[in-house]
Image (tube, helix red, strand yellow):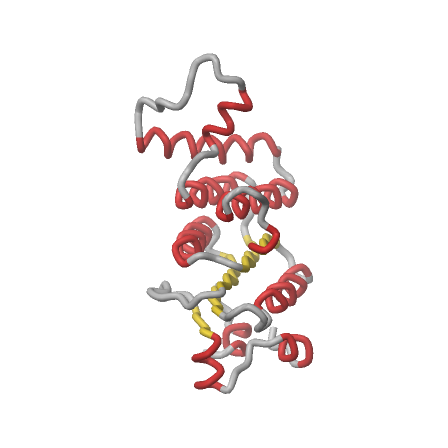
Length: 208
């Protein structure tokens, strides 16, 4: 399957692209973001290059959660509560005693401790918040994913929102790609299908 086939399919779409720096990954993401904004539905996006001093996965989830809250017409507090409650539940699953929490902790301290979670727990909590926000369809575009984070994010988002369009990109090749996700590896596609993932292609001859 090439880009034209992927773009024209009527089924919920998911695409994984790996390409080195300087080969148009971010330009591709920006192009698809612009295309998605012209359609109905919610558009969530993140570029790893814009990550804060927080670890990349934490910055990713916080950014997407903020976008979910802003895009939803539901109460922001209820969405944030769903996110935090899911994280607390995950921590109870790991340890019923929650030794890091103290009775005299301030609210800010408690929230910060709740946010100390694994990547999978953060993704799970984000999916819970998306459902609480009442989002039925969304486009998710993320550049700069790690292998494990990409798989977790894809699986959780597609489970929460079956009618989702997902584009995840990485600088490094992926292995064990989910069966229902199209994968295009830069060097392989360029050699096998004469495809070049480049700014020139995206701008001059967009296939989306």
